[in-house]
Each structure stands twice: as C-alpha cells, then as structure tokens.
Image (cartoon, rainbow, N blue to C red):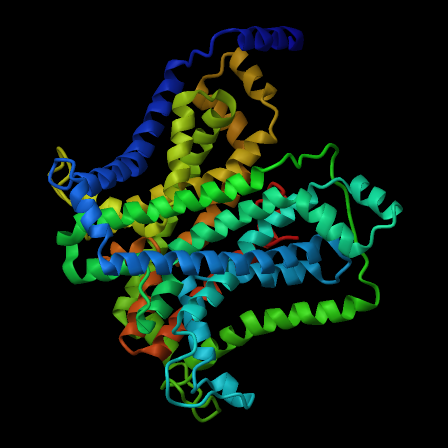
Length: 577
C-alpha cells in the first residue's frame, strides 16, 4: 500500500497543478480577504492622491509637495530616519557580535532585556524617557542628578527624537545581524586564526563583511520603522515643534478632518515613496559583491579573556541607562498624585491605577476594546495564515505571489498610511449594506487584519517549510478532501507556528498606535493612543499608570511565550538567544 501511495504521489507531481474545487474556493476567499483589506484601500489611496476629483491632476500634487511645511516635514523625516538608523546599526551590530561571537555570560537574560524595548509601545517608551529626564524626575532626584528648572526639555528636540528612535530600533538590527552571524561557517574564522589574525582583524575584515547582507537588512527595517514610528515622533516632535511627515498628517487630519483626505493621500504617498526608496537603497548596498559562503555555520566563539568583566559591566550598564532608568521613572510617576512630586511613603498612592482600571470609563473601555479587537484579530489571522501559507509554500503560482506581496506591503508601509487608506475606502457607505464603518470599531478591526497579516503569516511559513509534504499527499491519494487534510494532517503539524504568530500579533496589536491613531473616535477608542491623549491633556501621572499597565501586559505575554517556546519552531521567539 505504501508503494502504491508513493507511486500516486510521484504521478501527481508530474501532472499539471490543477486545483480541486475546494481549494479554488478557499483561494478565492483569500483573494477577497487580501484584496478587500489591503489592495483595494491602497489603490483607493493612490487614486485619491493623483486624481482627487476623478481626473489626474499632477499640478495639485506638485503644488502641495512644494509647500514649505511639506518640504520641512520631508527633510526632517529623512534626517531623523537616516541618523537614527545609523545609531541603531551601531548598537544592534555590537549587541549581535557580543551575544553570538563572544563568551559573554548570561546572554539569554541580556538578550531578553535588550529586545524588551522593542515590545513596549513607542509612545510609552517616549513617555518614560521624558519623565526620567525631566527637571522634576523623581528618579533623578533620588540619585542627585536633577536637571535645572526652566528651558525646554532636552528630549524635545531633533537630537532627542534621533536618540530614542535609534535606541528603540537597535533590536531590529540586532535580530537580523545575529541571524547572519549564526550562518557563518566557523572554518573561515579558524583558517584566519591559523594565519595569525587577531580578534579585531577577524571581526572587521572577515566576519562583518560576510554578515553585510544581514546588517543592511536590519538597516532597512530600522529605516522603515523610524519613518513610521508615530509614538516617539509625536510625543517628542509635536512639543518641540519639529514636524515630520507622519505628525503633519496627524495634525492636519485632527484640524480639518475628512475634508483634508485628498491632501493627506498625497502626503501618505510621499511617505510610502520615501519608505520604498530607503528599502531599495539598503537592499542594493547589501547585495553589492558576492559574499555567499559554503558550508553550515557552527558555534563560533571569541574569548574576551581579562576584558570579559569590563564588557559585561558595560553591557548591563547600557541596559540600566536605556531601559531600567526610564521605566523606573515611569513607575515612580505613576505612584504619585502630581507630576514632579517626590516619591515617598507619604506621597505613595495607587489612585492612578484605580482610575485607569475602574473609575475612568474612557480608559477602561479603551482597554476592553483593544482586548476584544486584538483577540478577534488573532483568531481570524491564525486561520487565514494557515490556509494562505499552504498555498504560498506548497502551491505557489502568480496569484498566490500577489497575495503574499500585498500582505507584506500592508505590513511594511507606515501604519498611518494604511489608516488614511482605510478612511478613504470605508468613509462612504458599503455597497449593498448601505452603511459606513468609519468611526466604528469595525474600521479598526479591518486595519488590524490588513496590517498584521504578514506578522501572523511569517512563523506559519517557517512551520510549513519544516514539514514534509508526503503525509499530506498520501492522505490526498487515499481520497481525503482538502479541508479534511488540513484538519487532520496539516494543521496539527503547523499549529505551534500559528500559535507563535498569534502571540506576536497579540503583543503588537494590543498596544498599537501607528494605525489606530487616526481611526479612533469618541465611540471607538483603543488603549494605544490613550497615552498620547492623556499626556496632551496634562494628565501625566495617569498616562504613566496606563503606560505601566501596558508594559505589564507585554511582559506577561513575553514570559508566557518563553515558557512554551520549546513547543514552537526555532527562531519565532525573537528575544531568545
């Protein structure tokens, strides 16, 4: 029977790739899903930008782009994105080299702490830094390092934005460079050592040039993330009156509402162009010259010797200064009744947490709305990613490639661009149904499904790549239908990967701000933008409490994912060394 089944499988592989009816139906549903939530809104955005009145009008586009405020915002966007990316490249590369190439101790704990800021919402990170280095900072006051009163906060400046963006996105570079370093064959390094090369010579003339593709891939991620990081740019740039494209879109939409959509579409298109150009340049730099190597990388270690205690102390000091100090200031601010009060047993209070969880209906409802939307998003995307990965990995074809492309595009573009596209697409009443979802939680759900599909899909693609298809094909030869094979054979094999993708989506969407900042309304609020709204309204202590609760939720999810990581495909948990 086994021989007959194998012969059937081989014969099927020689046949044209004709999909059965059930597979065509599922593929059709996937096309409707991706087209309706990614392709159609982005196409509507492009049309609104170049043909706002139904007729192509490049004159209006050029006039808008040459306005002084747009030129200033564009220049500022490029400045902060490029400089923060350079800072992230330096920090991320050093971190990757230390954890992969050296015998530094306690690597797992250090990697967890280094990657943690990436999991914390950027608006909370910005708030923590602002409160940590304000003249009335309770933490700096305890350390005797209080800044002088008067003058602008040092972080309300271009330098402050660049610094925080660089720190925040360094883990992105770290993850890609670490993956590249792990693939290097140790034989090359051993040969160089035998020839008398020092450790510094190894790193700068052999290891880093070979890992260049990973370095520039990380740079591309950091550049895109810097351009689209609304939380940090808004929390620091708006008070500093240092506009960038993303904050200009936000302020214009707040000032003029849907009447400004045509102009905002042009700005969104400009922002997406900068993003694509930056990624293209980074990819071109990473592919220059052939740096491919043969062989499989194995453990590679450069001993630090007598410098190990110094390197370890410097590494943990960096964690203390960039993470522990700001977060401790955030916690201290959340435990007093007034911003700037000294934390003591007399001033210690939990009233801010009580207000956030119980007494403030708007905050409580925002928490519940975020939890509901995130949970629904996770359930839907886990199901969609399982079927979509099946076609991407095992069926392929131009239509499947297009689905994959648009899912990645919706994730890669700045979230505020997707928000503008969603408003344009869903502002008018839906066909047949006759009502609009603009201003409701449903438009936020649609944006989440579009934005996070690629994030849910990636671990599942890795899971499919590690599964032998012979079992699924044997079930097909035995007469099992498509849905039966998915239920009984495929899904049990890749379910851990789907769960890992669901965890990553949950952590990203629960406190999300990039997409929802333009989509929230008085009737539909999520918790991510609440920190910005509270800080703008002068409720700094309440904003700090909300930020601490958001961080606590992230930590719990990270610890749960770590606890069950042995059941997940290797590499899907980014903070594991």
